[in-house]
View 1 (cartoon, rainbow, N blue to C red):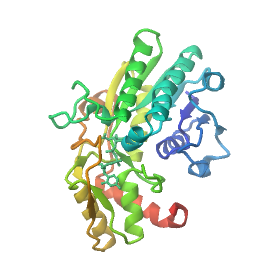
View 2: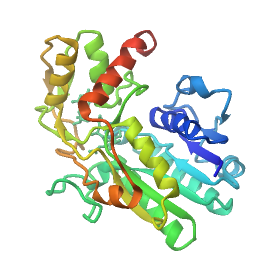
View 3: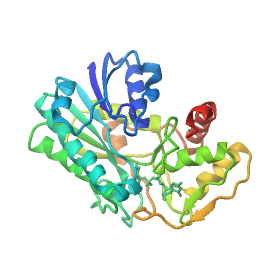
Amino acid sequence: MSHYVVTGGAGFIGSALVRALFEEGARRVVVIDNLLTGKEENLEEVRDRIEFHRTDIRCYEELAPLVRGADVVFHLAAIPSVPRSIAEPVLTHEVNIDGTFQVLRACRDGGVRRVVYAASSSAYGDTETLPKVETMAPRPLSPYAVQKLAGEYYARVFYTCLGLETVSLRYFNVYGPRQDPNSPYSGVISVFMKALIERRPPTIFGDGEQTRDFTYVEDVTALTLKAARAPGVAGKVYNAGNGGRYSLNQVWEILQRLEGVRLPPVYGPPRPGDVRHSQADITAAVRELGHAPRFSLEEGLKRTLDWYKQSAGKIRS
Ligand code: UD1
């Protein structure tokens, strides 16, 4: 296989996937991104090896020629963030649901061999049992969760009714280098990193005892590549997590220890649409896709912190 397309390839996860593709010998990588949340600088090291298109996934006419004939399309383009989907339900609906539909439609029309779709752990909502297994009924709590789940359903019926091979991966709170800490909608670990480097206390929404299965970006990209070629998995959905669970208070404790500082957090009101606990059962991904996460939270945090320190000049807003 040699011809890949990554939608959202200038984003934090998408750009890591592009680098991983080249590491495993990919020859042709087409990146589609409208640069709404993605940044070209995320692709700095591979800029002269990729074909970059500043294209919006809602536009079928522009998209169709770019995906035609590809071996695999990795569909990561989305507007992430639970609070952003509450603040901007129309825009996020259009990009996350309509855009996903147009990507699937273009892939089907263009004879793409397989689509790997970045779904989200938010689909589970507050299910009572932990860890969360793919067989559980979804209970989305926010527009974002509904939108990512709708994309998953579309991916499945594009396989069952329209013959396009798709695999959905429910990403669980991915973190790592290049995650943008400067937006009001930034992922919590990037926000913690920035606060730590600037020696400021972070704001924690709620009591900080909510837990997440924080997953290091390289573990997610490795699994995403495996999903592109695993046999017998078309139409399925898998958890893409680490399998652990840490509270925000624990994460902030580890980070303070790594830096040797004490900065007690400020606690604010809980965030609407927030899930209380999240943890992936990764049994199916291990068995059927060969998932093998390599990074403990502490190791992932160390690597991430190193990157933020080296890039401190760049991440300042
Ligand atoms: C959710 C999904 C995740 C998805 C992400 C996309 C779940 C369980 N996870 O992440 O799979 O990739 O959306 O955006 O639904 N927080 C603070 N202070 C801050 C920022 C956040 O305390 O400055 C808290 C939030 O209230 C939340 C936790 O940190 O409890 C994690 O928030 P965030 O990083 O935004 O991710 P999720 O919403 O959990």
